[in-house]
Length: 279
Image (cartoon, rainbow, N blue to C red; front, side):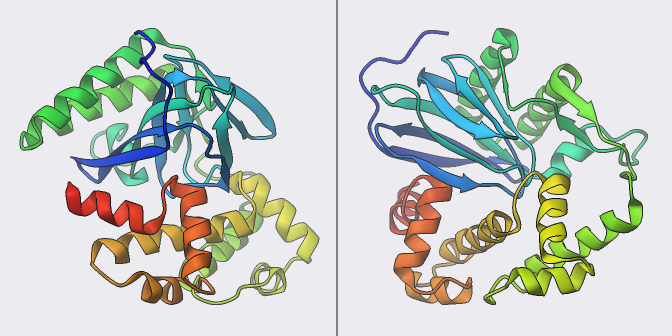
């Protein structure tokens, strides 16, 4: 792989690859992502510059050709590691599709997640780039697309995944935290407080915050914002006006939606909608 020419500018494009997978090709000169997470796997490569981010309490500098691997609900930020900006391509892959790639005899296997968010694997990085280009060129070949993506994801998890126990240590506490996560998904339109979540979990506010972060690698407020942004993207696709989207998703107003959406997705809601229409 070779570095892309010219200094990156702030831009991003999106394309559907099938099976719920979305490809984002992004270029940023000076944009900095705030802490956020995704409700899906995010798998990509850095194609120019240095992509710097913090995840799991560590800073990573993803160089050209490095793979970036985020598990669902794993919070991270992102910015350029140099003054020259950076580019990357990334797949957003539904958890259910990844799980089906490692199912055994039709039954779901224990959860398998990526062990580290930044790895150097030239073979798999090259495969990612080739598959992305091929699927963009032939978007109507559904069977081929699904077969190719399944093989790639299976290989990625075999090379860089770690198996997570089906039942976590402290099953009762894990069940209560799952109730908290479900509460956020159900009531994201409300102005949820830590006290609300602590009451659901039956824990103190301090214990709840620490336990949620340890279980899901993201603080409750970052998870809430990610749920809201994911819902906003769905409503924007359906053509709802942005001011209405903001209120429907629990944001104070459209400017609040714009700040949080750009911090998570990299472009404003209006810019994202325009790219969808153009596509």
